[in-house]
Image (cartoon, rainbow, N blue to C red; front, side, top):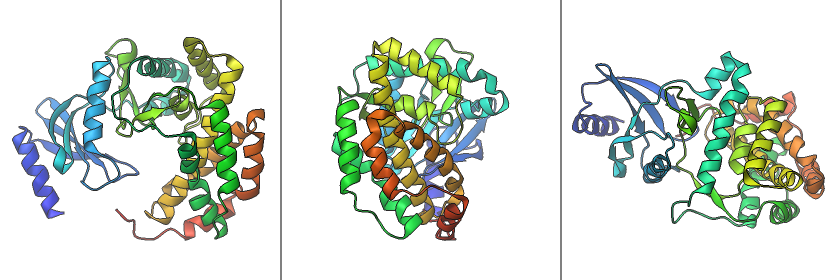
Length: 338
């Protein structure tokens, strides 16, 4: 820890921010942490992303530059030491969508419409070269977190994944396996900022995009509208899905199956991720979010195109009752791992 503090102090000094006041700003499910720096009337954000973690600061910097070249509001990079995982970023402020909507839910459609337009802008542009491009089988395997961690924590055994992977792969191939576009993956209200001083799509500030890859057109839309951390109004979800489908020229019925399939895949994976964060990382604070994700999963599985997947999921995934969530919480280590 002392060595890391020394590295950070040296980095800030070299960037001209060594005398700035520093305060903790945020942390997340990864090892990243953020500080806000104040130097007179100026502010900036320090991203401390220790080497060896799952997230790559090089990928963050590259994607930030790509987004900014499209006229979108990713933070400008003021200084960087990528080998040490240190970035000094433009401060985009505190007006997270999640915070604004908690105080004024009536603004939901107003804020979500330009966020949908950002996705359309992203997907009309050529993506950066060299991004991962997963197959339908890979996406199905990723959703297997639901079996490996959620079902395991709930029952003490890991179900055989063969039928699960087969059903999900079949659904993905049929409804969500067309031409790929750039997706940011964690596109939701806690990673979006409202910047009213800017215009058009630039009013949407973008955070946490370093895992960007090639994926299906509806994936980030699902991430936005089926948010694990907040309930999106049914009317807003329907209006934004219609806005996206109309802008892309998609047939509404075909797009509904596409959206439900991606929603099911994402919800299944998140169930496993939240259980794993408890069992491995000692972070039980994600468990109360599981019932919302479960509800989203059931909504998606109710689509007729997913009848086969629903049958498999019903057989291997128990509902997250209060007693079951308490059972998972009791398995959480008392000392969080890094």
